[in-house]
Image 1: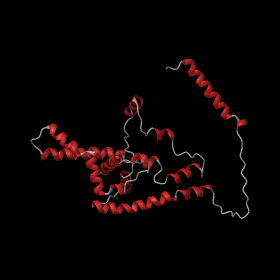
Image 2: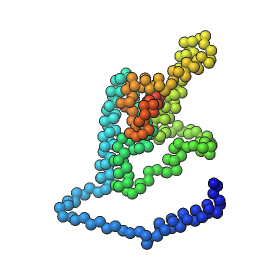
Image 3: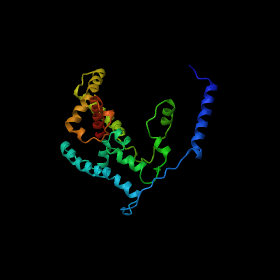
Image 4: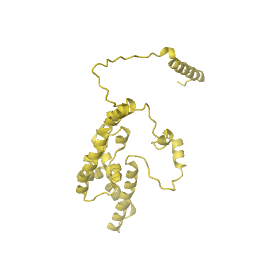
Length: 241
């Protein structure tokens, strides 16, 4: 049933009343926790040191990961000069959204240690580069002008490189098929190209290269199914291209 205007106004009024009740000082209470100081040693380690210590697993993982990428270079027979770009091509969006492979350490540093609710940059600027849906957001995205300075993107996953690699893969396949089948019509070339660039075929190539051993992704329900994992591996291969 449709909600009347009267009911909507009443709901808004009730929400405002509830917010006012939450903000009253009379409803708050302070909890006092007493800890004995007998046997305690003052080390001088404050919350900022603890915060940095909890981030050590992330730092160690970063160093070990870049050392392991040398095995990937040997496997494909090519050494990437820009190591940061290689890491970006191997980073799944879930890895960034869930604070990497050590989410508990990162969440603890942000919520329990150091400065409470730290501000990193402009929140509006961060939200402007997240995924958007709907016609209003689409119009806003299409209305944006290009960056004439050519600044580097701060999006820390491989979806942009995947977009570029997908176009390169189709271009190479198109040129190869065009000269391989000079007598074939346009419809046949499109069919051959579609079969070549399928995700299941790209996933098999990615498995031969061992991308599943180097791809960074968060452990969660998103990639539990084999089809989802193969799709992510195919996207990772396109990003490397």
